[in-house]
Image (tube, rainbow, N blue to C red; front, side, top):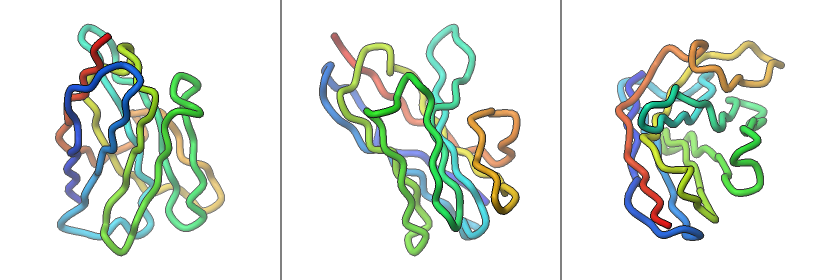
Length: 126
């Protein structure tokens, strides 16, 4: 499956953005989808993921309560609604997909995701 992230931009602290991750070449059936970000000079960080089927979600502590992940399988798209953005949310945001065994919650570990899309830049100014 090929993925393309979009929706990034430059916003002020406290504002919101919605990122989209669109799949092509295959549907997202059976795939969990995760969002990751990488700030300059830092390692890639898992911030959220959503299962296929039971649509259980997982969030990093740094974004819990501010970010919401959702999916629309009819549109082959996963969204990341980001609110109350902070300068430390700045980075390149990537989406990735992986098949997760039934009953298991998706992980925020980038190493477990095999299909990656191009990133989208999010810059939050103070």
